[in-house]
Image (cartoon, rainbow, N blue to C red; front, top):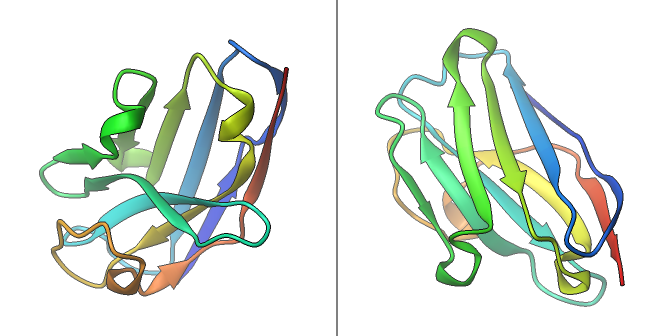
Length: 123
């Protein structure tokens, strides 16, 4: 199982980025794929997730309206569109997947993790 996150970079406050998470190695038809983020010295926090089969999404309330998660089943890829970025969004963003159906935002529910991609938002 491999998850490859990409799309991070440096952006000014108010700008946008789209992160991609490409999945390979197994069928994800019953999984949930999510995004987490982490800053130095802090926990890895849940951002958003999407169920692979039904496309149901859920996210942190504070990010609704700015961050949108979506998936492209044909490409086995999940996206995180981030708009109106703020300096406090600066973090390493990780994508992760569960082994089965889940609507959890807990890090422990996600068994597969990709390497992170760094997002830096300058003020």
